[in-house]
Image (cartoon, rainbow, N blue to C red; front, side, top):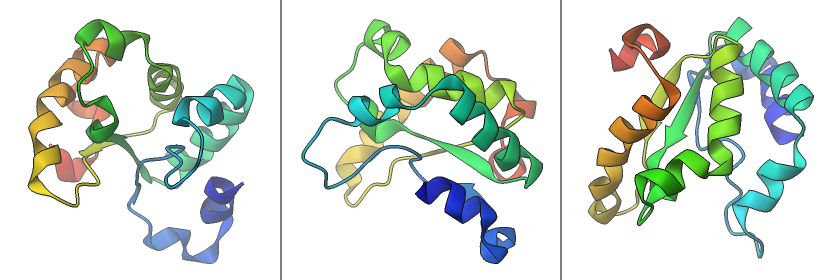
Length: 128
């Protein structure tokens, strides 16, 4: 609901990217529970509006720390990222890093780009 509230806000015109979307933080449960509860139709509705508003969708690499390429390919984020791509969302990469240690995981951006078959045109203009 919070994601949709942002999209519907009159202030959404100032939003350039959705940071770590659907990665619940400070929660007593695993992020996969939330992502897996959201239907494809709900994601499509939200991501169509995200693309329409020209708001980028962040692929946050910090969740991928210590994951192998196969684990990345099988992760629930991939379903969400693929739907966002199908809806025409542009992507950014981030780490939500509060320390330099998480910058070590940017190598996973390349792996995720390959898995999602991202091309330059799929990236937000600021990332090209």
